[in-house]
Image (cartoon, rainbow over all chains, first blue to last red; front, top):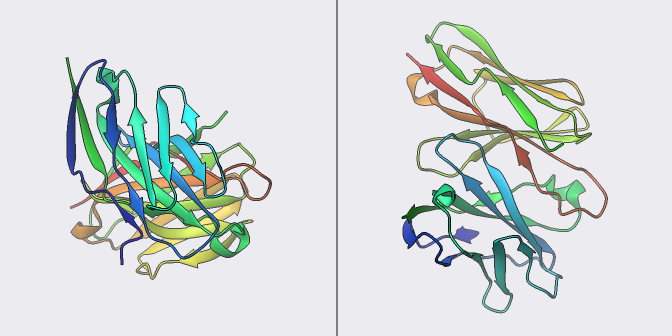
Length: 119
Length: 115
């Protein structure tokens, strides 16, 4: 079974509007971390935001927030006030286990969502 | 400074060539990773180094040979590649230990074309 599912291959949003990118995950671990990365056409993977499984509050970083619903196993990324520079591929990823020694930080990636922001 | 550098940015090589990709980070991270990424696909993990020792090899063909000469450098030696090995090769590093969220920081990648 896929550990990370992103069901939106492509999303379109008008500049200055908010957009939500969906991510669901599958794990039996109690301790895990969820990450969102942005990949522009240049190729570099840019870390955006992190949510730990024990964090009670949703993570926020500037215009990015993570809508974490543990019971539903979802970790949606919300981008507020979209900008043209937000156009990129967005990947949701998960690291299982708290003991990094056992997992070596291995990340499981979803297939990604291509976001296009139009003026 | 959260920078991971990779050289070269682009590489074109024939199937009989030998070349190397280089990755460098100065963040004190002790875990380093090589990923392969095909167009419009997620990155695929190839190797993980932990404290300069190879810890994970995801059944990568032997024509890819990783090397970690020191805690800041990671190389990927390429030999007798196939056209299907053409891809974006990403290097990443992460902190090992502590209470940070252990995010991986990625370099800009090397776009490899095998002719």
